[in-house]
Length: 360
Image (cartoon, rainbow, N blue to C red; front, side):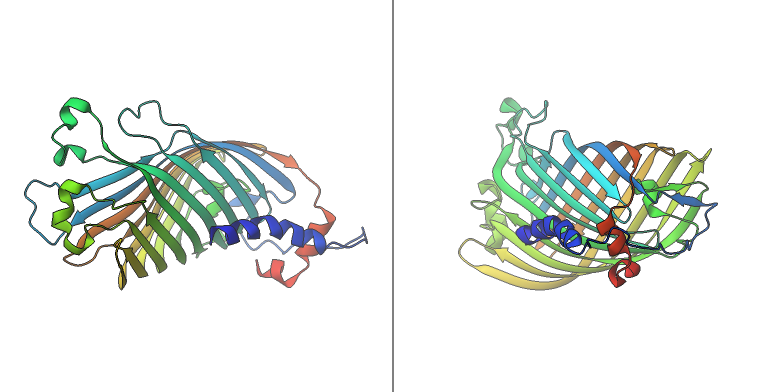
């Protein structure tokens, strides 16, 4: 699935170029503005280039519910901590592409091993709706609850480390903003709009995701495996998820430049799960919960922008009376960018006259 995502990212611009014409007098027209221009402004013909740094963590919480565990040795908090992730963001009109990676261990990773992290994203949409699409991969986890089952931890300070544990997530998320005539999501969490006055909206949407957690051997520490019964040798987990979400968003603007934004969504999620138990596999279907929360603050001027945001994604994969299992990602992001005036390319002018663009 990841290969297919990458192919789409790189072939899409080629497809657009292939649709261009030798006629350099292509006429095109933009949609009439369907929002209150006193509330926010869109940068129509600019190429926006930004640089960002992120600090990401990914937590996988495990706890068996089968047997009584007074010592808490079967509670596991697997954590992946990436060092600062450096990346680049390119934004034009309705499209935003982001890429970032990190392979260096944090400076305070003593006894924790280290995490390799990779991130790739493509966002499409305007003021009415946004489709966020991304792939995230973390490799290398440690158990933050090592002290509960390893008596030597107090002396050694070495965590139970899973260097080959990989967490991969492909997500496509859709959000529709009811009050899009007054509120623009991309002004607080993007860079091609500028909110001029405070506004709020309800959000309606959904998501489709593929989550995979895999290790080269059983991931549960040997001291706790007897409490997990049939799941003691679990070395992998896969889930295909479809969710419906509702939520709200708001942006507070000061002097048409400084802003504070926030939003949250939550809703039920249908999950088709497969557990890899080393010697066998188990497939289950569950209805659970998923959601997203994000906050940002920064400075948004005509040419320059500065943005800090924090985002949390979570998915609950609990199994009644068997496992408590939650996957949670937290991202701290700092971006700085500049908007360059860029005449609309000929191939893009023709694309703007297509039915596909008018739908977007």
